[in-house]
Amino acid sequence: MTDTSKAPGKPKPKSSWVNLVVDFGPLLVFFLAYRHFAPSDDNNMVGTVTAVIKGTVAFMVATVVALAVSKWRLGHISPMLWLTTVLILGFGALTVIFRNPFYVQIKPTAVYLLFSVVLFVGLFRGKPMLKYLLQSAFEGLNDEGWMKLSRNWAWFFLVLAVLNTALVYTVSFDTWMQAKLWGFTVLSFLFTFSQLPMVLKHGMGEEAKAEFVETPPTD
Image (spheres, rainbow, N blue to C red):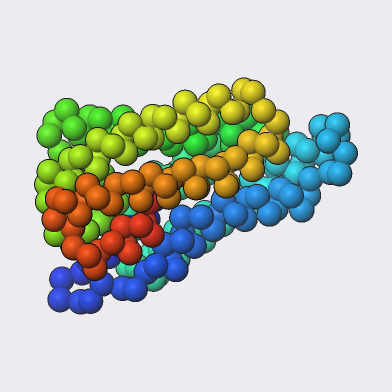
């Protein structure tokens, strides 16, 4: 969900640490807040729900802060980041209002499905929508490379949507939270690395490799 600014006549901002903060900072804040407020007794459902609510509020605040940081440091906010922020705030509000962790858990499924549909529709119309969602231009990557990258991420987002939904209905909130923070993050980076040979084959320059690896589309 990271974007990169590329203003004409100006050098592109150094953004590696900013990308990581914007992409994974809010989720880490959510995890830490939840763990801080979570009761020691696993059977204390009231305490667990309260911890989820407080964690969700922290998540929403951190997401807005990440949006501001992206604008401040990178000079632009990508459509992917805008869409993700809107869904986080929407599902977060539902979680707080109805005091039900389900909404914050199912939010990633909604994000993954949305991005998957957008990318598949773009492929059907012959447009590499990932390029527009990221507002990024990896140096040298040609149109065929962008199309293949959009196709691969469309399928990967669909797999993540199915996986997240399965976890929501089969494991505890604590287990889901661990899987979301560590498992999905590792999967995203591994998938990004797996795309390197393809994008290099389709013209992406060596200098763009670091940016490519550091900016995997996330929810």
